[in-house]
Amino acid sequence: MVAGLGAYAWDSLRPHAAKPAPPSMASVWRPVEVTPVPSSAVPESDLVIPASAPVRLEIPNIGFDSSKLAGKGTSNPIQQWTKAMNDAKNGVVDPPGKWESSLVWDSTVAGGGLFGTDAQSSGRILAHTTPWTWDKDKQGAFQHLRDVHVGNSVAITTEKGRLCYNVVKLDSVLKPQVNVVYSKGEDGIIKGIVYLITCDRPLDYGEGATTHNLVVTLQLNQQQTNTGSC
Image (cartoon, rainbow, N blue to C red):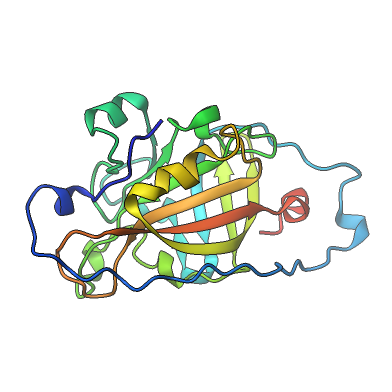
């Protein structure tokens, strides 16, 4: 189990003067509207995609596609965050490689953190943001995650198939609380839920340590998964 999602590498290796905490992002819960699918296109039973590792993450509303990051320093942008890596970093999740192309999925959470319609835990995908905005080629992979909205569609392709999700909540959370709230759940099992996590800081905040994480909660959309319409 991750001990604590602390500041990323550039935040944690040197002291900084105190910085004002970024403004809280109010939690937003709203019903997610689902586009009706013709009955002829709906399978007689729900599609089962066995739990497995993610290989691609797509967020169309912000133009994000992890497969386009493959040429920026790693052949597989979504790498597994293992217990050995977690122990070596003392529980601080720090996606390896270049900030602009490195993502990890957390396999240290209860249930293994796999992704599927039958996944027995909530999945977590984490990536960097950077404190600057003027160099677009060196911004973190999740630099624009703050621009997603409730109701946006997200697709996660795994080793076993393609899963469709909807954004249902955005939170700005103090770093020490992230693992308590977003990795355990009830007995470590929150089926159909995925969390996208990154540092949360105002634009052009500077290089001071950040105190909050942005957590985007995704809910499995079984109907869209059935028809592959995400």
